[in-house]
Length: 434
Image 1: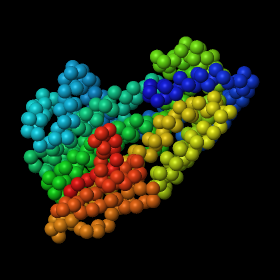
Image 2: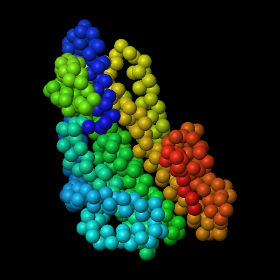
Image 3: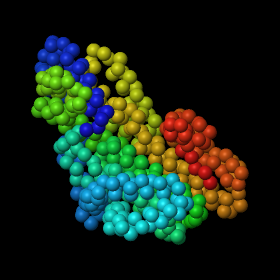
Image 4: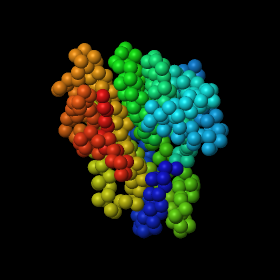
């Protein structure tokens, strides 16, 4: 289970221990009817309520489905000895940091031969247009996603192959394959999949810029831009989170409280939660669905306006109201469990993906301008920085014969084109140097 949610559930037991008996009796009477009203409203609004609602309709034909290949890739990769996996992951990561290191290049080329079958599986999966991982969403918070870490590793491997490619065609093909892995996993309806998709695109993005600087602007460079696809749809990953959280409610009604606990919890906390859950859970789920209905409304507005900052502001404002409502904290606990996860991450798949896309497209345009005129422009027309609160454009300045292009990044602060602080590796601006 997500550590953030598990740790907050610890406090749910403590809060419940202080809940008034009268309040619990009220919940036992009113909770079920209030819950059914919210379920009916959610159905009318097209919000998924059962695991079956997450299945692609119509089903994806096997010939177009990357899911089985990615599961097979994960199975074979995880069957490797742990030390071997760790060494390969370190090698690919080190090579992306220092692609000019001849010793790393030679070692990586040797590993390509040794793991050719696994790499071909990843390449074959990236070529398919859709992906259904066929997860059993009825497991709720107990559901595991072992493929996600594996796909990040193979995105690094494919990007490393681009660094080592001797010609532009092979380099651009490898970058496109890495980006398409991000697209495929982004079709999984949950927030963590959307964030993994962004992480994979960020890996491929670095390879894109490096390949662009190495081989210059071309039709292949333009074609590879399209391989990154669109940002994950918030309605898609919100849908999975609705199911994961409502299944958690079902598990609690069935007395499966222990599955939410960690080692720091006491038996008394678990016993209290197990005692109160059957009575309070209908009311919690009602609050949960009220929360998700609001989230879907905001997500749909953002898709129309393109203002994904508004989605983050809605989460922050909602959390703020609940934190003020001290009397209803016990009833709102399940909603509060979710909001720490979403308040920061709900907009990242869109803002971060949009910022990387604008940087890629602008870098390509700047290099095309340099190819025509012999130098970078003094004052180019720049797209808006998605992270800028006042919609200012990306930052740009010439730097000798080159130039610096950057987004202010998720801290919403212009750090002058500094990507990170060396002391704590804090990520600052998203930087492209040409």
